[in-house]
Length: 372
Image (spheres, helix red, strand yellow):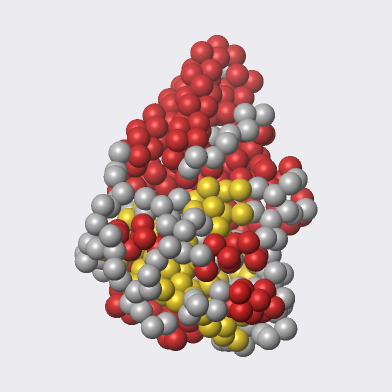
């Protein structure tokens, strides 16, 4: 009985790896739009502190090769270290329309949603790019996404991202997981059910669509506001896509404790955003399943070996081909085992720590502040 269960799990892992390879190839087969976009665009950048590489990250948005765009930045208070960085860049790129807003303390749990709401109110254009402070892009970002939005049926586009680690083992391990497991899951979901959610540090949307689904006021109590943004838009009948543009997501250096807190937040949030999908993540973990199978039923080693080989092929295709990111083969098995540990941990506990504040998570994905 145990052998049959383990064999079924290994078989499921092999099938999932095959799905990830096919999904990656299907994504790569989609050509970028040839029709240039002409819409004016507003870029919304919520900021909190001077992250590592912040100036270099923000500079890439000032240097967009696009005829008509504006930049809006938001911080909670004037003493935020990001203020001086933004002011310096605004002086350097004085020909780019840019504005810095001080929002004050958010009146609800999701501070990012509050900042985005304030910036959206001040934005001059219908097409908006919402992007985190730790993202870096090339000058053709706006040209690419504006061309995608030539399709008037499109409401939300979410950009896949290539994780770029800082020096340090924890950052490198996390980037390995993002560039293989996380992106593979998105591609498989896209192939099977279509994009019915949004993810990642950069999302593009029409203001009219955001307003139609209730605006950020509707998302204010959700930890994963990007996820529900795409979910609400899809449910309302608007088109949601995985953009053809891949951004860079720069991961800051972190201690072991900080990395654990971040991974737990991610796991617990994912479990509440997509409960059935979270359980199904077990099939995305061939190596831990193979180790368990060989330890309990040694005769399953051929199936275990096949599962691990397929995992390696899928990881390479997603990381190297889709994201154009290097893959550290030594870190991959370590990350796979760590990912399994944090996946189990995600089933327990209902609190998370986010930017030094503690929150309680609820079953529907909403959260509330417990302490500052």
